[in-house]
Amino acid sequence: MFKFLLSLFLLMPSVGLADGIVGKPDSHSPIGVMGDHTHKKGELMFSYRYMRMEMSDLQDASHDISRNDAVSSTGSYKFMNAPIKMHTNMHMFGGMYGINNRLTGMVMFPFINKKMQVRQRAGDKKRFTISTRGLGDVKLTGLYTLKKNINSSWLLNFGISIPTGETNAKDVMVMMNGSHTHSTLGYGMQLGSGTYDPILKIGYRKKWNKISLGWQTSGIWRLYQNSDNYHIGDEYKGTLYSAFVLNDWISFSGRVDGKWVRKISGAHAHHSNMLMSPVFSKDQGHRKVNISGGINFIIPRGELKGQRLALEYNNPIYQYYDGLQMKSDKTVTLGWQYAFTFKDLF
Ligand SMILES: [Cu+2]
Picture 1 (cartoon, rainbow, N blue to C red):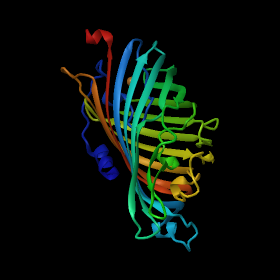
Picture 2: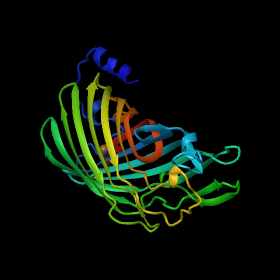
Picture 3: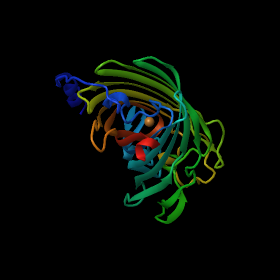
Picture 4: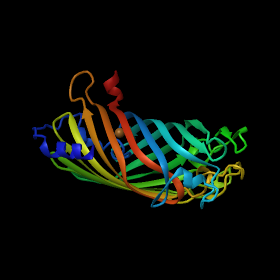
C-alpha cells in the first residue's frame, strides 16, 4: 500500500493550480490528524470521521507470544483466557467555529463500538465475544494561531477531555467453569478515562506550491484516579506528514506517527480476581510507530463546492508493549469535512 502511494507521489505528472476561495486539497492535513487548522471569524465547520482499528495476536515487550503460551498452565503467564482479535469502530462527529481570526473552538463527539473475541484455556477452548458501545470522551478544545506567515503557521491546541465515556461497561463473560456472568470488562474495552484530562498540542505547517509539510506534538494527562479506583496512563504523540497536490481537487499524503502510552495505576474497583486475562492486566502501556498513506479530495466548484473527502490507511512498523497485550494491525480513517459561514446558507 505504502509503496503504491509512494509510486503515485513520484510518477504523477504535475498540473497547474490556482488557490481558490475553497482552498487547496492539502490545506487540511491527512484525515488521521486532528486540530491542524483554524477558521476565520464566523466560519463553521462540520466533520465526520469513521475510524476502524484492528488488533490481533499477542506481544510482550518486542516478542510475539502465542495464545497457547499465554494460557498454558505450565507457561509463565497462566492466563485463564486470551484475546484472539479485537476491533474498534469509531464514528467521530466534530464541530469547529472561528471565534475570531486567531482563535477557533472545536468539539469532538466519538461514538465507539468495540468488539473482542476471546478464547478460553479450560475445557474445549471455547470462544466467546464481548462488546461495548456508546459515547466516548468528548473533547473540547481551542486552537490558537501563535504565528502565521503567508505559507507557514504555528498553532497551539489546548483543552480538556470530558469523562462522558463509560468506565464500568459490562458484558457476559464465560468463566473457567463454563458459567456465564455479567461482569465489568477489561481496561481496553472501556469507553473513557473517567477523568477530566487536559490536552495540549503544538503544531507547525509549511506550504509551498505543490508540497506541504507539517508536524504535531501532543500530550493528554490523566492527573487523578477515576471513580472506579484506577488511573489510565498519560499519552504522548508526535506526527510528521507531507502532502503533494496533484490538481485543484486531489492531494496525496504520507505520514509517520509515534505514540507513547504509560501504564495504568490503581486497579478497577469492579474487576474480580476470577478474570485472569491480559485484558484485565494493568500493563496496558505501550509505544508504537506507524506509517500512513492518504488521499484528500476537495470539490472545487459546483453545488458541492468546498466539501472534503479523505481516506487514510495506517499500518504499524514498530510496537513495544509493557506486558502481554494485543498487537495493533491496520487502522483506516475515512472522513468528510465541510466549512461554511451562516451567510452561505441563507
Ligand atoms: Cu475546520
